[in-house]
Every structure is written in C-alpha cells, then in structure tokens.
Image (cartoon, rainbow, N blue to C red; front, side, top):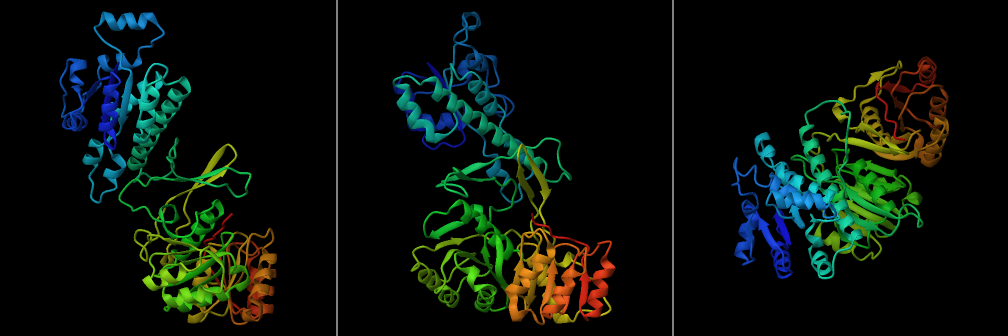
Length: 513
C-alpha cells in the first residue's frame, strides 16, 4: 500500500504518518512535509521516486504526473486499468492526505501583492484531492487533520464505503471552499454581479435548535478574503454565559449592526431584531439610560449593544433588567465582574468594523428564498452622504436637523413599514413591520405617549397619503424626514405646512424587509 502526504497544516501529520507506516504503508511526500517527517524519523520517500522526474519551476510542478494520477485514478475493479498500470511500471496509490496552501491566511495579511497571492494558489494539491475523491471506492482521501485518528483506527479493520464516501464529500467541499476564496479575492475590484457565484461557509458550531425546537440548526461563518479583519457577531468572543441560540445570534447581529452604524457614543436595546430603544450621547452611561427609556417594558429579555466600552456605572444601571446578551468592544474590569453576577446573561466582546467612525464597510447581502438567493450590496450609506432637501415653507432648526439625521439612521434598522419618533438623539417610539404605514405611525405615537410633543419623525419610505403627517401633527411632532418621491407628495407637504411642521426629503429610502 502506498500513500502520498503533502500538507500545509502539519497538525498531527507526523503521528498520522507514523501510524500509516506501522500499518504497512509506503509513504511519499514533498517539500516541507517530507522534511517534517524525516525529522520525526518517519520512513518517507520523495514523490520524485514515483514520477522519476524532479520538481521543476520552483516546485510548481511536483505531483502533476501520470505516475501519480494514474496510481490514484485507476479503478481497482477494472482489470484493464490495473494491467495498464503494470504495463507502464506504475503502482496504485491507496491514500492521499493533502490540505492546501494557506491562501486565505496569506491574502489576509496587510500589503500582500497580487504576485504573492498567485504564488499561494495550490494546483497540485486540489488536483490530487479531486482525483482521490473521484475514485473514493479505491482510494482514501483525507483533508482534515481531525480525521487522522479515525482513519488510522478504521484502517486496522478496513474502511467501509460509507466512511470513504464521507471523506470524499469532505474533500470536494474543501476544494470548493478554497476555489471560492480565490474567486472572491480576484473579484474584489470588479464591479457588478458575476454570472456565477459560490458562497463558502465554515461551521462555527452546532446549535441546540433553530427558531423553534423542532428545527435543527447550526451556525456557519463566511471566511473573509482580503486584509479586512473578521468582525461582528460571527467572530465575537463570549466572555460569560450559556451558549448562544439561533435567535440570540440573529438579535445580537441586529444589535451590533445598528450600534456600529453610529460614530457617536451610542447604546441600543434590541428585541426581535428591532431597536426598542437607542440613544446617542457623549456620556455612554447616559446613552444607556436614554436607550432603556425608549421602551422599558419591551427591553425585558432584550439585547444591549454599546459601541463604547461598558462602564461600571452602565453595568449597575442594567442590574434590575433581565437581558439575554450584552455586546461591546470592551468592558471595564469592574464592569465585567459586576455583570458576571447575572448567571443568565451572555457577555460578548466584538471588534469594531474596519474603518469604524470613518467609513461603513460594504458587503454582499444574501437573502434566502426557496430555490435561490437574492443578492444585493449592503445598505451602507455613510452619514455624510445624506443630503436633505426642505420641502416645506419652514426650514428645520439646527436641533431638529440633528434629531432628524439620528432618526433617519435609526429607521434604517427597523423592519418596514418603519416609523421612528425621536428627540435629543433618543428613540421615543417606533412602529415596525406593519402592512400599513399609518398603523406603524400610530404604534410609534402610542409608544412615545406624551414624549411625542416636540419630537421628530422618520419614515423609511415615502408618504402616498397625508395621513402620517396628520397623525404626527396630532402628537406634536415638529419635523419629519422621509425619502419623498410620491406622486402625492404635494398632499403631505401641504398638510405639513398647515401644521407648521418642517419636512425634509432625502431621495433615499431604507426598506428593511
């Protein structure tokens, strides 16, 4: 029996090779892997002993040879194949253990050139993996070091077809993820959407269940290709608390996405992916108190996110409330110890996005539909890209403009139809996900109560009727921000003028379905 071992990730490879040798395998290897096996005193030969040909082109061509691929691809159940091997003085290769050049890790380094990236694209490795996986009934293919112990154990009694098939599936997936990473890297500067696209995912961990107990679930990460750091909830570190659930991850992602959309110190409280409270203030402790005041009842069982370090004062203010999760870029040591007294609280620390406070990273947003995906660029419009056009006779005051821009950024994170009421950069009430915009407006006003007076209103889309303006006026709203563009804009503008409400239009909408 003969095996080829050529790995970039050398974890466990010497023990695996030693085990194969003890089982009677003749081992062949290349480059750094061969050197590691020699140093570990594992009997090993060069792949050149199979090919009868030296490595050429600075090692670019080592295993791309008929003696290698004939030995891998020959079907053991076809005498003609075996006779052809014998005729050409070739032997079978019964096991291939290969994992690939660290392309993703290489291009993640700052300043990596295209030349260096291209040199880290593996050719021989994927070719051997695919050949072995194609011929899995006769060849064992191993791409994951975690499989080494199991393969050694089962080789003692023979590996059955089911196990060989599992290893082959894993091998093809390994190559598919690798090729996807290369494609993504080469596509970074290309505008538009390609005709073909693959999505590479790596399992982070299994979940107890999905949205409901009868739905199995797992959490997968999309590897980042390029110099950008892995940030967000996917790569957040859990410092305290029980494992995250499916719904926890959804809500945490919504919370972190909303709070990191603000450059100013901001705290939000999220419930069912919608902000029930959010506030910006120079004092992060005060920002929390104001965010909580948005809807103290809905805050129960919610998620708190802060784009500044959590202080001890903030932690103490959270004490009376049951929260599922707290997320921040950092915690004061005393605050962390204080929060750990709440045994049911999950505490996460997450990296702020690259360029935070200066730019909002753009990314591809995937939405699953049955049988396919919708793909769009993210709604990542920077704050300084929002232009305001006053549609009414009255111009908004400076204070109103600040609140309007705050409300406009908040409404982007509320499910459509979305209406937000805000004052002093604090969410007072919101209506989310209603089929009718006027109902969302009525809910927002009801939530805000008496605080509606003197507030501003933001709508994620245009007003086809003046009813939202009338509702806002009845509650004492003084200014409105909305995209504009309805064929009945004049009706809403006229209503706003009658009630001395300043209305500004952005020419941009923020639907969030």
